[in-house]
Length: 307
Image 1 (cartoon, rainbow, N blue to C red):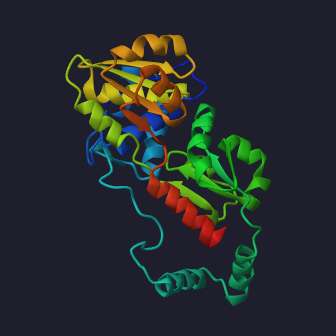
Image 2 (image 1 turned 180 degrees about the horizontal axis):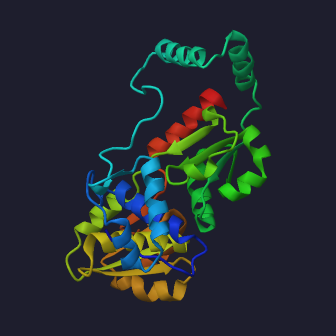
Image 3 (image 1 turned 120 degrees about the horizontal axis):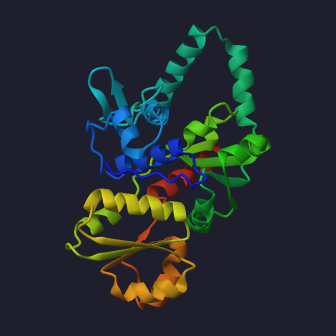
């Protein structure tokens, strides 16, 4: 497992660990049941406090990505844990029967359910898709990917900003990832108006990188410094020193114009595609997208049925 931390980053070291480990699990670089360094070993390696690693591991275990067992250490979970009701049931009657049983066991009656269900069904129409991500420099990338797919407004925010503007919850469909959902805990979220994207980032991109001959140069281009750092770590974890990696921001046109002709593979995000194509004289080898077509369709269906 390759991990690096930046003390200059506005993102806490704990959250940097969560992001990098989570992305390596999702990208398949860390396999199910693979053993991770112990808390103390990783803390020593990175020169950070034991409690910082402990907190990051504990969160990843809470969301089902890691398993922490006394005596056997920390391992990648075999699969993301399913929660609450059995999601394999396809019958609405079955799901409703289970829900009513749970409600009755907790002492709720018909009047309680009628009032709350009526409140859900009479909610204000959704007026915006609101993507929540803790990295502000992801926000432009998110809007560029989502806006072409929806007729309504697409906006972005951080969980901290949403805490101060919870009025937005009344008429927004929240879109976030597994790695950010914990930061929304404690808010009055309508479960019909939140889509958690179980993305598997960079699988195709990492497959391309894995096939590059030793000594190749891979150039990564993005509007986001955070994405560049994550991508560099993923490539490093996969290939180590076998290939050279150059990470460049989209706005650095002079450096891009110099480096791109020497690249064996160019990977970029969607907002960078046009400038890379212009400077390279052809499309990049791969355009990275945060949201898969299935995720876009999931958001569409949620809007259709609950918006």
